[in-house]
Length: 580
Image 1: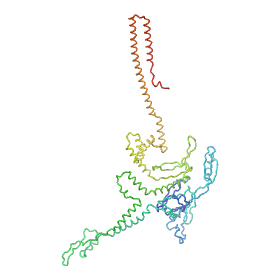
Image 2: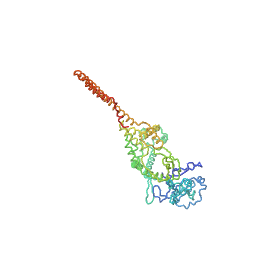
Image 3: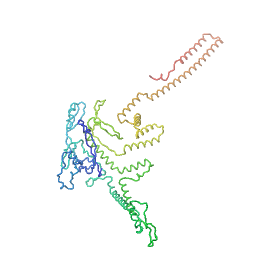
Image 4: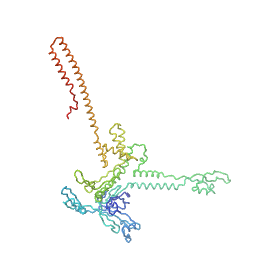
């Protein structure tokens, strides 16, 4: 930008102008050179972005030969320039021809036709000039006209003019806005006049004074011959040729005669009587030189402390100093953000007409990488069967937002610095440690790290730490989920192992109980056998009849058999007791 004002323009052009069958267009950004003297907006436009301007001029120059070859006519040479006033512009010169593009906004009435599908109820609205191209397609699809009304639309026309008249008649261009994007340094309205100022405007006077002082010092240094010896005429008589060429030949020594009296006696040696004094620098000039240098640094934002910053200073201190320095130029960044927002609005209005259906365009991601997006694509929803439009700018209204802040690289470096400090304070067994390590690796840059960063990115996706950003990453996540579902759940396996262990413990307890009961039964059998023997012996001793003895023995046998059946029945495990 020159003169505190810059400008660039958006224009539509063919993707391949040498292919006769390729009618695809693209939106390009072109610079405007020397905008302070070649771009003029409607003086009634007061907004920063000139969105309220109804016309604008963009002037550029051509050589007479190119002017004649491009427009097929010679530059006017018979214009009366003698009667031109000071405010009139000289469009033609012997060496250069000036022409201009004239942009004009017209508000025209346009018929808008609405169509409705009788089955789906879908409503489509088109301008009358668009219906001529798609009327057959609408009829085949079954759409029926339901409404027609007249609305106001902004249309932009551009023509090419010179000082003699129109070189190209007005023609309509895509979009609703004048495609000239202004960029200002500082801007005010004073006495209904737009005034602008750049970053170096206030530093121009100190710089001029500084240049004058340096010129004075240079002139003084150039005129100073150094210390010149002061000698008598007799001391140098006949030796003039040696002394007069001393600044050119730089001799190793210079001859000088002794001072003698009339009798020829030496009364003084061959030494100069003295030397001239060098020029003394004016103290006021030295102080003024220092002051002007400080004024320039203060106005331009250059800090001697920032330039002489030691290398061992803390990172937080450096960031604070950089933020303080950025505040001095914040107004320029804010104005640039306004201009970029205006460029986005103009681009959006042009893209609705330039980019057709199923058009692939190259986009730039936040990290600077390239990607491909499809404009006005149509896909079929598998669940509903309806046609869904993707990236269709002709439908709906959109807002353009611009934010001023640190760059993507600076924010990524800050993330790495913060997470590194967090990682150093974590325990080695912390479950969050691998996640933080993966995020740090994902945000670092280095030569030869692309494959490793891709592997790390996949691990972050699989673990659920990072979300997929494209279809490829979405497929990686889906494959990982399917693989996880096909494998046995480790928690279920652990639960089953715990249940089997519990069953084994229960069976062990049951077996131990059975062993205890068997031992008790054996002891009881032994006791009953002992009792039977005792009864038998008593019977023999007391002559008890055989019938009573046999009844006692049979009773003991029945009790023993009943207890034996109870012990022989198999014990039930906890699994058998569980309901099926």
